[in-house]
Image 1 (cartoon, each protein chain N blue to C red):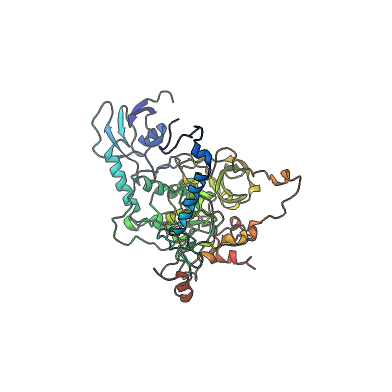
Image 2: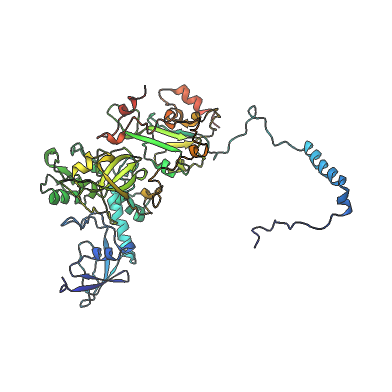
Length: 178
Length: 365
């Protein structure tokens, strides 16, 4: 069989030399390597006191976006759900009624929108599929939870706060701009 | 019909023999595949349809055996009949492809491109055509036309902005119902489909205008915004209907019937017209005799998640009880206790109008 890489090494089946049979020199060699690591720079950081900076392309928890007037962008077109390889997204659409124009941008909107964070693999395909700029993957993790029930995220968990009616909440959610 | 002469016609270097009087489009459809030109307005079951959308343009490189001169301009293949020895270029001709791209650009000039909202998305012929021939951008810098809203009754929704004026619905209303109450008013840029003086179309077969519409201009109000077609499972079903053939396609989600349409063949044309009762009022699984899953072209988005054979049509066997000597699982999470989607006490498919915010609020407490 042809090797996939040239890094594979054949197992050495030769009988052990005298130095190898002595056993202790190799142990000392190994311990020396371990000991030398004490003086190297530590890659570990002390989470949660210290936090590593996210990459700008980090894909974390989803948010549902609003437009400049605070109306929901999502029209429940279902493209995120169809693009989702884990089938984590479900939704139910409804028609906007007269008097709800300030809530929803278009005549159709997502009355229910759910992401099952247990299924989600954070691939970001929903973000790519969205034609309305409605769903984004933010730079946060889904917080840990003791039960599975806490991982079904509905619209109240996902929607960003309205910039016009709840500016403080919006500012908190936005966090410090980098 | 044996004395009718057979004409030899070559389309994209494939020769086929068709009876005299056949149009180029139908000869190409006989060959099938990519050779068949797209058609937005021609409908084989409607007399007089065709010749309006110009998407089926083909190049005739040899007129006939007797007169081998090529036709000077591209011709509409749905309206041009074949001659003996005719040679036609469809996808092999750059002129045709170029012209078709231009036609698609024209069709999309006034199209709102609201596919995320439109119920036709996923089975829209204009969507398919634009994916094949359209450009990503538009050169049109002006306001798209808008219309005063017309009410076509409580079953049919008209979105005039999406209309491409193919006249199919007009022909359907004219020929199928024998009572023409809607037609095309005004001309040019202002032309629009309308009922005369906002008349309700109460004919028993008028629902078929929804199926013939190649775009989302005429859609089913009882299905409006309920679900996307690619999340539904199309199954063939029939019922003993006194007015029509009763052969339909049900669009199911689980056991709920979300939509009933006529069965469509590979050209997107209705096989049997169905009546309004079948289409709008029979939304229970018990109303129908299910024949089996409908075959969907695997390139269609509707085919996503649908598997061949009986996969998905029957529920998987519960193994827990069998493995644990008849004991039921001690901890079982009912998804409905957490999820707000697909609540068992809200059956959207039973509403005969689009869902509103009130439908979801009722059971919150």
